[in-house]
Image (cartoon, rainbow, N blue to C red; front, side, top):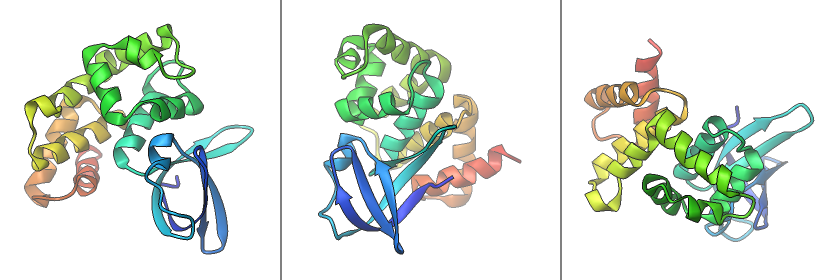
Length: 201
């Protein structure tokens, strides 16, 4: 699994970029949300990635933030009928925050406005993310309405990352809390790594 690339941004288009990593050019598909944050070509960048392996092709999907990648993985792994390209379309059509708010509120109308997403797909997105994973509860708990502290936000992001990987919400919470005992005020990525060690023991 290729999880990130570090190198020079050779080319940046709204739907894809090319990253030169030590003389090798990687073509990476991106959502518009990531394109909006891209620096000028020639700049050194670090882009998070997700590798899609198919019989006829390998696709490298890139994301500027981890929240974008987590959402992408939730969509392709846990929502029936949502593949790599439709998940990219959803990220391009809505910000992560807007999408989270729509799922929490059950706002299928907002999600169905995204190009390529019909009413039935929007209903599946809301139903499956809410009922199968308890994701909406995590998003609601970390919404602006509840004014979370930076530490609480890190915890919520860590739990959501573990849910994305298929762990139950209760187990994810316990593992993150235990990871906090040893890691203290660590970044989300460190907490997730430590929590995974706890969950796989």
